[in-house]
Length: 231
Image (cartoon, rainbow, N blue to C red; front, top):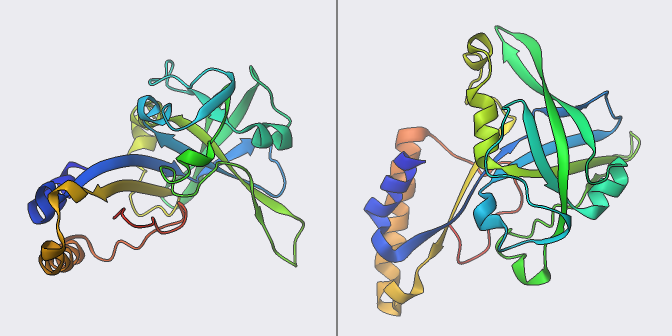
């Protein structure tokens, strides 16, 4: 993140400000297996998130996680209802890893500590994501659903940091199950209409530099392309 943040501010200076950062992991699954069910564990700063969600029951997920192999998480009431879970429920998730071409599953204990909803006034902050189950339509299969579970990004990173050394070494950024999201918004107090052409040129130069350094960073499966004024 520091590399990108430095690069962004080198080209755009104080015309941008950080808005939100998140880590989305789609390599989790339920144990025992739940048919037609897909899971995204959404890690973000809980201290920032609490200003943009409404806790309807229970409490917020903690900023850190101890022990590392236990994740306290939150979900919407609709998600809890469909999964037949309630405040205090404990369930097992499997973290799918790849090690030398073979599949490896690490067991993680999950504990539901809070139910929340996204107020209509906060949908912009979450870029349209209300964290409710998303139906996946496919005429060839039974109805499928994508569920999103909210956790502290620090707790999620602690989980990965504390994986056994042999497993930790197997994690690769080329895995398609991981998405890092960094949102910045334009700082209008630092811009005027006369700055438009220069801003476009700097954005073009920034994109060219990112492509040359890191390749094409296409937006992943984390949600819709963020709306203006976000980058």
